Image 1 (tube, chains in turn cyan, yellow):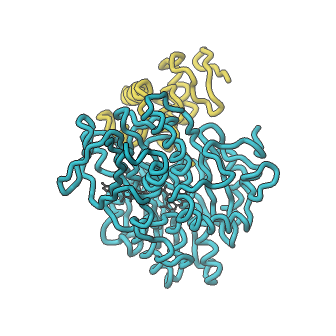
Image 2: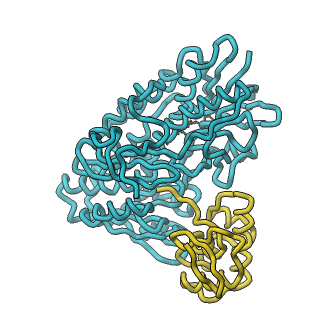
Image 3: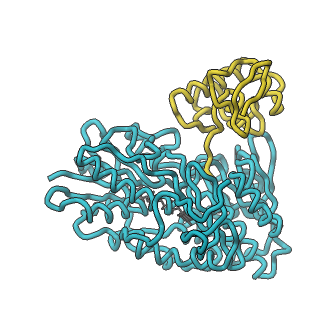
Length: 411
Length: 103
Ligand SMILES: Cc1cc2nc3c(=O)[nH]c(=O)nc-3n(C[C@H](O)[C@H](O)[C@H](O)COP(=O)(O)OP(=O)(O)OC[C@H]3O[C@@H](n4cnc5c(N)ncnc54)[C@H](O)[C@@H]3O)c2cc1C
């Protein structure tokens, strides 16, 4: 009996388990998946928790519910990978040997990386919303915040769901308008990038959103430390941005397990072939989702496209055939813009987000790069799609892993 | 696209990054430096540029954090050497592609 081990039972690991149990012969392969926690969070829902749009119970379910029958789930922290002996060692000392290993341990926030972020002001005037706890603490704060300087801040790239901070800024604008205190709130968006939208076409198409909503932007800002006592963030060049309430996206890093195993880069991401998803660590180790260093967006939609392609490549690897370089960096993201509207963007390694229709050429019904109510409903419907279609690896009709060029305007 | 730096024609992408590292020389770095507002290049600048080129040849993805751990400069010094665009400007001056940062 051969062994396939999946590390991490979040979005990517669960999808891989669902795909592979359908494809691998039960008499030949034993599939095991390992995760430290009991709860599977629907992370895109963290955006809506602070505004009381989603309740905590809307974004969490038990991990066990989504592990397909026939796959063995081990609940334990992973200590390290010994690639030379094809063994994974768990914190309780258990050793798992494998023929094939799939890494899907994701990325998480590391607020300890910036001086002054963690400490007396954490969850008092400084918050994140990339964790369940952070999103809830921020909800409680916003419930009776009377206004002042709100700063939304990205510490450094890459981060998962790179559009979420912008969405937060847009939703905050709507939230304070609805509360009747928008005139008492000064919103500033601070980013280490040269603009809110780094891709040229997006910038041209979307800069009006910030202007219309009266959101100031401070670009090229690389935070050196946070002064919680005096309420300001300070960059390496000495520039200061004052805040009463700071919503920051801390540094994102892969799990420490990668550095303990000697296989991560300086952010604990795993060097991986950007087209085949085979790691550069060893040929029987593959990776997908947020834990890789591939230059695609760290997003659930990307993990979903990768899962389909990696499943095929695992089957080819087992047959001793050449892997297909099929992953093109495809990402497909809704961007909430407030007031019940959203945008949709579709892009890959090669092409910037384009305008046009999705998923049907000329018909849509979704418009790319244009705000609409339908897109917003699409985003909200996505929660159902996530639990019921993506995690069990049911095929989404009409949506292909590779970016389709039909119906889109390239020039 | 082509551009002339220090009397030499080099090929660049639409954002002005050199597309062929073999065409690079120190005079080109000095001229690009002037374009981005860095008027005087010290040995330290060139040490950083050489490190970046080396990483590029090894196909290691660049990050500010990585340069900070290189042993050549810490992050603060990197910002002092290349104000406002430490990785963007240094990469441009080193003649290597613009570091990827997804939207
Ligand atoms: C606020 C927010 C909004 C988002 N919005 C969107 C969106 O609109 N659209 C979209 O496509 N994506 C969105 N995302 C991103 C999406 O949630 C992630 O990209 C996706 O979950 C990545 O899947 P993953 O499996 O790689 O990692 P995860 O889902 O994070 O799973 C990793 C798993 O590995 C486990 N693990 C890690 N290390 C260990 C260890 N040492 N031992 C045991 N277990 C371990 C963890 O416990 C976890 O369960 C959003 C994310 C956030 C935070």
